[in-house]
Length: 136
Image (cartoon, rainbow, N blue to C red; front, side):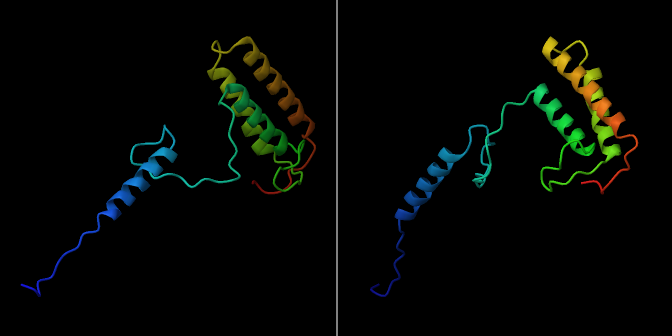
């Protein structure tokens, strides 16, 4: 029996695994699904403001102004007129106005009406300009 093999179990690995699980659970956001792996953090990932209708409308209007050549493209710095894309974005803002009719605050109603008017006027100004560049 002296030649009998002995199985040695290292109990320290269990404590190490549990410590890693505890650390991962602490770093996981509260709204993450149970059992989800933590996402790698991106140093350039900035916090975002709360979602709102005003922010959505502003984003759509900004994209439309870029497509109308009123604002340079943020990534390239170039100005391109893409009337079809601009029309689509303006129509999207108008669709949101129709779908939210009666559910907007006075400020939201004023914002959407003002944006639509300004975007439509900018669109009319590009009538004689040829479309330039391909869709992004």
